[in-house]
Image (tube, rainbow, N blue to C red; front, top):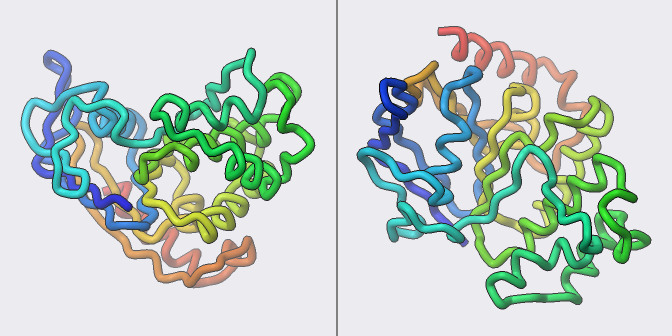
Length: 243
């Protein structure tokens, strides 16, 4: 399992300074959400961690080893499922392991059945709903050999009810298959419902302005959204974003 450390990270594109002295960490099997205004560099952070971009200064360490410029060190799930249309559901979820030479068909079938996709194992992506495609993409990330998964607003394109169902499903699947997760979202409610800890970014050039340890015990369900304690934490995080 993975421990991620980001230290003194800076990144810009010409005159556009995106990150400034960014510092945070994600502990083993922790679920950490990043909240920040639009354009605050959240996707840039993922591109740096994933080795697609390199920082101007700073360190990115995974289990104490630098991963700057190294692709394939993390599992990644983008905003859209990015499933290959010519591959079946099963072939899509096996892709990450296949690329690393660690394909586990039996585990893939087991996880697809637990995700309610047992009847769609041999289906093509165009036969699936939006929520089903997201489940396939997440199982693909879980089955990849990398133990740190970065999720970039994976539910933002879903309608509200499907989004809630996906959030509950994600909590249940992570309860069984514990992984280290770094999650980007614009939704305070989503961050509170899913996370162990929430990191708040400033407008760009982004740095960490606040950090919240979420107090709610697991397992969680949607009744949490109506509790006064939840609303109190939502207000606190909202005002930290407005500063």
